[in-house]
Amino acid sequence: MDQLHVLPFIPVLEIIGTFVFAISGTLTAAEKKLDPFGASVIAFVTALGGGTVRDLLLNLRPVWIQEERYLLTVFISVVVAVLFRKQINRLRRTLFLFDTAGIALFTILGMEKALRIGVPPIIALVMGVVSAVFGGVVRDILCNEIPLIFRREVYATACLTGGGAYLLMRLAPLPEGVPVAVAIGIIILIRILAVRLHWAFPNLRSEE
Amino acid sequence: MDQLHVLPFIPVLEIIGTFVFAISGTLTAAEKKLDPFGASVIAFVTALGGGTVRDLLLNLRPVWIQEERYLLTVFISVVVAVLFRKQINRLRRTLFLFDTAGIALFTILGMEKALRIGVPPIIALVMGVVSAVFGGVVRDILCNEIPLIFRREVYATACLTGGGAYLLMRLAPLPEGVPVAVAIGIIILIRILAVRLHWAFPNLRSEE
Amino acid sequence: MDQLHVLPFIPVLEIIGTFVFAISGTLTAAEKKLDPFGASVIAFVTALGGGTVRDLLLNLRPVWIQEERYLLTVFISVVVAVLFRKQINRLRRTLFLFDTAGIALFTILGMEKALRIGVPPIIALVMGVVSAVFGGVVRDILCNEIPLIFRREVYATACLTGGGAYLLMRLAPLPEGVPVAVAIGIIILIRILAVRLHWAFPNLRSEE
Image (tube, rainbow over all chains, first blue to last red; front, side, top):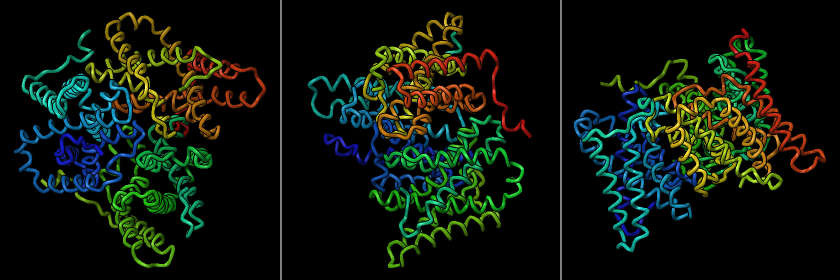
């Protein structure tokens, strides 16, 4: 389980993150004119795909295989997203904040999971980013598009920066909970600034 | 191994299912103008991809890694499909029946495999559907299309319904073999009716 | 680890192979107008994706999860490819030779890894080919194209032929190191001849 004992509210956040990611997955599926089954698969993949890819790479059985609450959360999200689509579209700003918090949380939880089974820190950082962003990558592959993340990477850079800071803070004698909280704050801050200020790396072709 | 002792003819059906799925994969590859190597990969993925995804998620080594007969079956299917393409195209109705029986069988076998390693029933149902339909999903991804199943989901709904009935029947004191036979019958029946009567869920966009 | 004790220089070759594959992945990403993060992912997948798919199928944890040097090699490759793109484009012939040597090496190393954990020879051959070519397949899927390999398969046929020869030579009382060297030579030779002489299988559609 992905629980850091220092932060007892994390399981709740994790379910909220799953819920928000699944909502955004369902909205994407609706734009692609998928039917309810397709939308459920896309919602599932968006919410749980990143953690699943991480667990497959770490040779672990994904958590959602053992506990029904993740699957149930996705199912409820799909029903909510289909029934209240118009209202949700008006809440886009709130959704973005939850989504960003979810990304930040999944990055740190993914790193912790990898570190705890003895993976080297730099690889654990990659596993954290995979947890946070690969759900979206698999969703885009299933929807037959070049993954968005590859063309708008500030998203992943925020995770890398926050995750890197987390690794450094773990080496320092900080009070329990501080590295997690600061790292999550860094990721959220960078992503919000990036969207507000339209940060983006130039694509490779344009350098020529 | 995927053998239910109550139904000793299942290994044979499993090979027939693999054969039929591989035939249909080869025909798809031919339409995409792939070469013989590409066609073999697509045939393989169509026939064994669903079970492979299920086994990766369950953290098991896929059966075809340990036993050559699955690979051999796919290879023979490709040769047969390439040599007798015209004749096979005339047998489309028969192929459809075999394909449907294969889907039904793979659903129940996939569920049993998951249940036997202690996966919760509702997740086992998902694993059954994954076994039956993800071969086609991976095939469509490789062929660079939005997976057909996401836009025509009665296919998956049949598996979900039959699989759900199987879970319920397992709780009742029915004679050995009855749940398997009835569940497979339900899946085949729904799929045939769905195709005959043109059942389809509306896509999400059209609701607006 | 993928080390054949008879050939102590293999770990070095393996890193060179990873380096060359990552360079070619970065150049592909640049053509797709990806940004630096996307290019790094594509480079990584091109270099390490084949071995990763093989390890997932064998239910092993991929080597790059445990040792940082693979990830570091990919990172250096991306920096080198971005900084020296023009010079690298002039070295295409040399790159092709390295790339071919890498494919040959990865085929045999992949087979050895599978054989050592008791996989049947014919499946080990498939695992060798997967190691060598699936990095390119996953790269093409991420870039939203039908994998090149499915339409130009002499590449995979070279691996199958050399790998098959390796299996036969392992049965004969040959001096240590001879099967590896001969099999790698066969793969390189077939691929060079195929490119020089424009060998290609007809695609399936054109037979009609």
